Image (cartoon, rainbow, N blue to C red):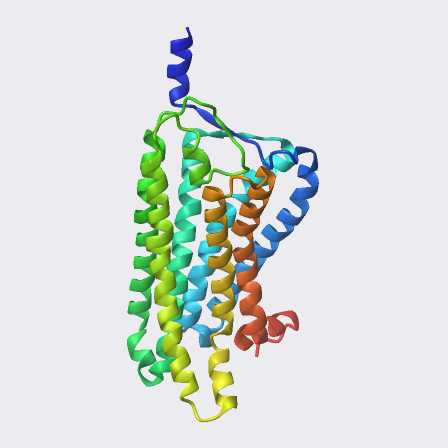
Length: 315
């Protein structure tokens, strides 16, 4: 009888998502800022897409990449927040095994794609500042499309082994995930097997794939700074570098918390579990919420279009 039960549990039909362990009584209150952040992320990113689509002067590589970032952020938030809110509001904790792995795949795919898009945006800024006369010939629409396709394929392919490995592990410890969504390391930690392959591949994706992205971005900005400092006056230097300010803020909002979260999960064993989970949730929501705000505040073209929308001036 016990053998039969163990065999049945090896491939669980469902996982149980606990939400924020230890803070269950405050789930309704916690849901308020989370729901607000989700609403801002959805509204902000759809606004970016609408503005770029309707304003022909924004049909340039920088804004095409911004649209790719907006779509990626929408996928990331929509793959996590609806289920998270159903846990907070309705105590709907069960998630199908396949649905859990699908959610895990979309989360990590979106994060990889976002990293790749930030590299593409850094390349765009590099060409625009260091070789402005050739910008329109280097970053043509077909080239931008190929870059977008490459970023998407890289994200899908790199994360696929994580999904395959997670699916093949035997799960015979428990089916309870102490989180409100299916993160890779939280799922594979439930396996009753040696999961070092999954853990090492996860670290490979973090440090080698996303780490290379950080190196490419850093090299691009070193070249950008050299070009900026070679300009004749301070005003021109500030104005030129100001075109990169939105991108820099977005980079910092994405990479620094992400690195902190990944290291905390693997090495911060003395940190309270509810703090782990809260920080991880905020990290998933913060960039999708902040990205459209940053670009809306820092980009005059988007500001102008927003003002015309609110004042009903279509000129």
